Image (cartoon, rainbow, N blue to C red; front, side):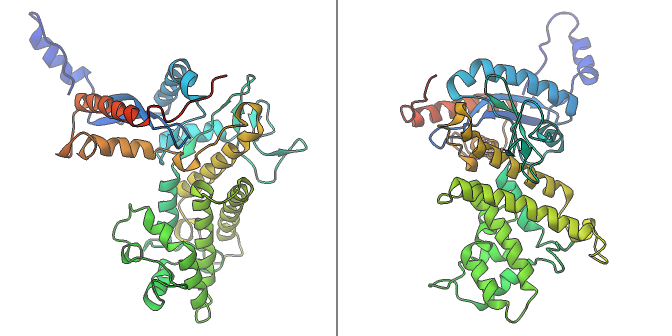
Length: 378
């Protein structure tokens, strides 16, 4: 931990004033550079202790100063700083939304524009600078969004209506219980995924929305027509996975998935809020506003990153969308303690320990990737 330096005859005054003037830092803030390239590692560039009580103006000033640092020291080697990643923090999301909630037809903006008109429903954009660089292209961590999308159909506090009927995790459990696990028509849903032992497990939602699981729901629909609404919602989550982590989907198919997700979420939300949905309301019968907005922004972010290849500056850029977001920070924290790269059986660490630790981790990653990639120079 960091301590004030105490020397001289006024030692007592320094100690006494520290209780009044110093802010106790009980958290570690980790900032990482996250190249959207599979062959490059994510590296920590800043670690400091803080109180986690900062507000939006403080964060805005911090983003300005760290952006200047990145453009001077990092961008010449790794490329342009497109934006910031987060996993749902309200302060960071407010700034992300502020930077992207601008129509793509506005001056100095970039998005899907056809014949001078924004594509129907394309309401967010990135900033396009005069030298051709993109910025204000932020990311919500798609793994967290995936977990939240699925968790709302397994929630005792609300029903997520996907049309006239709610989508339910119980229908997936029925598939697990009634149909075979393996074979040509196997559902592939593990017990851990169906029973939801670990809500932080990001693989479980993927298994519950996979092709085998959806095929099983479709088979059981003959006895329960309400399962159609669950099937359609599982298809939406599956498209969200393909958009961000698909290996075989074409760029066109991924753009179509982004459009489908945004449009479906908007229509489903409008239905619940409309007069046609008697007795329904957004608080009890739809996903929270935060989840809705985070997923929509993440889809726009992915779509714009795919569209960036139409710009001369980024025509050879391969944006690894599965690396978008803040998962690199989660990995960084886990590698500092627990059974990470540099320590075993040690859960907690001090600010100084974290500072020394990320330096060691960066060194190890540099060794592992040395010579793997030769970045093009313009």
